[in-house]
Figure 1: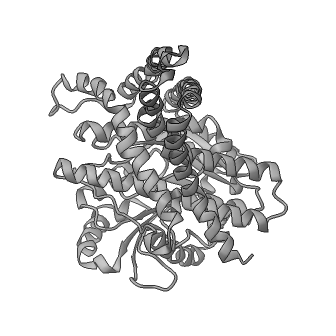
Figure 2: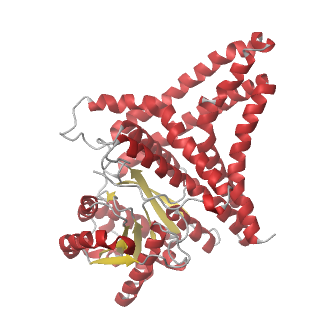
Figure 3: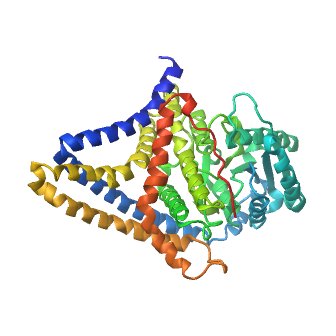
Length: 494
């Protein structure tokens, strides 16, 4: 079978798994409701155990996070030999973000404890938005250029071959232009650490010092990406409740995965060696989810000798928010759908597994399972638990089997399981209050109560901004190419 045919077949697998699950749930609920009731109870019990599993790992991650941010990492770096050789190269691809967003990003960079004269910063705009980008770039350069070793401004041409309009194409262009500058300076690639940040990313003051310490003390620093805790705190107090709940869901998911680095991919803002970035030809420019694909590019380039190192230190970005609730909800849905489009890694991964014989099959199986199970659960679990899981009970109650013990007791069993699962919601509410920044003076004190009560929206947000966009993304991948997603730039509003 040709590689293109295999790729097309693998593109169909995730979507088929989802729709076959929904179809079988409907069919079996009608013809075999008792069997499905047993399955639903077992499925809910499994997810209660998953909730307890989540609480354990997220709690452990939170305590690591709290401990890490209290350490003076720059002092530790100064105790390492020859640390001055390390330079940082920071990329900020942009596409229409407001000047106040870019300014706050650069202000956070200037608050870094790592010497700014060892930072090369690249701000990359799009040629199709040149009239919008040029005055913003000039303002940023005038205000901040003198603070860094260098501030480069790049402009990505529109319509280059083998590209899609998206962050990856811009970042690829930025990478090649900065490489030309690095080569002129003669800085060794192995002494350069890259941080690939969204334009609204505010790094913790200790971020670059901690990253440098990680890099200099790691046994294989060139074969590792470094993944921080991702927060969405920049405008968390002003964002609508549904956006906050969805944002915290992402935060807790990543915090849990930081405790299990064998499951980690790079996500959103992250860091890595410039040597590895050059080796793989920079970020892929014809896909949507370039921030996580870069890990797989390195993983296959080095025949599996590449990993993600967790960093329990935060970077913060904007929660989805627009000028109206409707626009905010629409943008949140599109953002979640774009993240769910990470399922495009499945066919890429499966095709490349066949090419790289040196990677152990057990490791291939682990990565394939983690990605498939994660994407499948994202799309199906909330719908199966909250909607389709009730269908066999409705069907059984209208038939002769309605008097059976299992039918009579199933609602009580499911209610008890959901009560136990509420522990997860309570935990989320508590941790979210410990993570958010101090309340701005413009926000009333009673907003803290809203921050707790907002978690009652979790079942709704899991379906509307979790399952449904994930189902759409995986269905689009299974259909012909004309239905495939392009890159959606989430509008930034303060």
